[in-house]
Length: 178
Image (cartoon, rainbow, N blue to C red; front, side):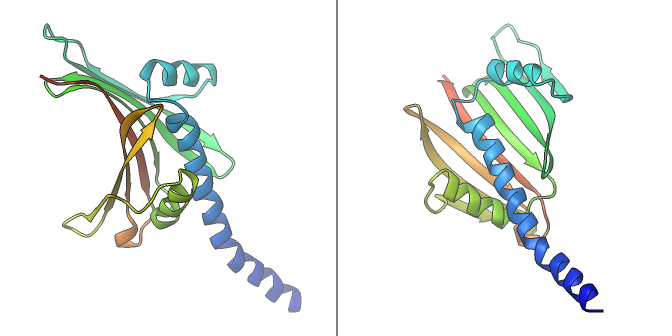
């Protein structure tokens, strides 16, 4: 009976530690893939190919005569803590040209991811934070400097609804629009 209680207590205590490990692993994966250098579609694509990551999605529109296009490619990444999706995006339109990188994870807890993100990237409080009108999602945003360039970093999570799920996104405007 005593061993049963000990085993039960160990299982109950292991839940939060596992969640902390998951959010830490996701933030580390985001830092390595998306924040170690400026987001660059070709670099992310080459790295994913070198690691033999399976493609989850590859969509876009071809270049128009004006040079406008968009392209998104995503790969599934398996970590010891679970899997996530790594995405690279590039687009050019009237507002300019951007390159972005994102990590999407359905099972991480948003508040823990946010705390790990702030701690790991040495961010202050979010410069912009709002909850969706339906109360299901929180969006937190920071302006960050990377290699002398100003980038937009977003965390969108399901913490207001007490549900798992997080989307970490960083975007670099390469060329301003006209």
